[in-house]
Image 1 (cartoon, rainbow, N blue to C red):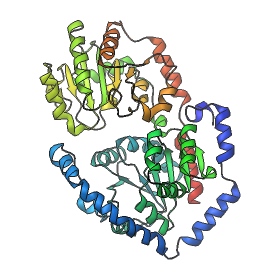
Image 2 (spheres, helix red, strand yellow; image 1 turned 45 degrees about the vertical axis):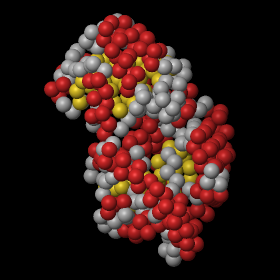
Image 3 (tube, rainbow, N blue to C red; image 1 turned 45 degrees about the horizontal axis):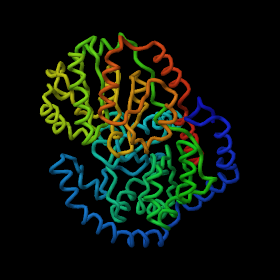
Length: 469
């Protein structure tokens, strides 16, 4: 795999891993034969027995988590979604054609799955794709991005719920985006001879440590997927460390890179500003995917910015949009004028709080600079590529443990900087605002970066076709 075809690996290292991880034709033949011989076989008794044994600790865990879940739903405004779907009662017909099940837990995974879904629609046009998510916000976004597809909430991690759902769904394959290893789900698929493939496989260093606490259970889960399409060499090594067989691992690159596009022309930005009613020719920056403890620092930076550059505007996008009202109250307590993004009458406010899924990318595309949240607090950071590809001067805090590969990929981009704390953030934003305009060289560098990335969707799609053959 070269740099153009998939991520932050040079050609030599990619070929080294490829030599170790590519399946031989004989191995693929054995796998296909296994699937053909077991597809119609009776469900194995031992995975079901293990599933019921797991139900006891899982039921206890749900019982202990009930107060927290109630807090999320009633206090923080999170949606629980359809109780029937959570119990496995999906309203879905039995399959009449090849059915591909893609599970993308949250918003980030849903976005990563989009290029793969588009590729599958081209390469396997007769297949039906069903999407499941863990959160209601991700379900809403999946429906928006994949019009006409069936989207459901993943059932509770209890074997009766999982088997009830599978008895109706009956997929030909389960595609897990990133790392969604649920023991009962994997056991149920194993008992029904449903092949499991991981795409965009990502494991953080912290994730390896957490999974190691599970001991033999983690090793078993790591061995079960038929194939693992890792994002990078580092992720591949971590899957090996967890116990995945080397011949089952392939470095396919990052699916999120396939959805990147370069910065829009300045004229398009001006047109979008006019449509949205935002002030033109003013410095605007976006703070995306922010968490509690960060919004206060961002607002302090914006207050200083307004003293020096009146008319500047901040687009503030909390990681969880249901917190928008709380964040808006923070804005007002800070003495700043604020409005929700969905409220068109407040577009001239100095702070616009993004309260709808799918609107953060648009905010980046009409901004001069961006701060990526989850990084000034110990959350491990969020996706840096989205604002960079939109043409924003971009910064992040020191906590980027979940995106070390992405951080390394962008290390040579002069438009990306790290800030240590809120004070450095304030200084950097003021320097950005003092610039007379975007540097043409920055746009060229971003276009070159976007041009050389991508290709993961095609590689994953081809692998899935091999497994389904």
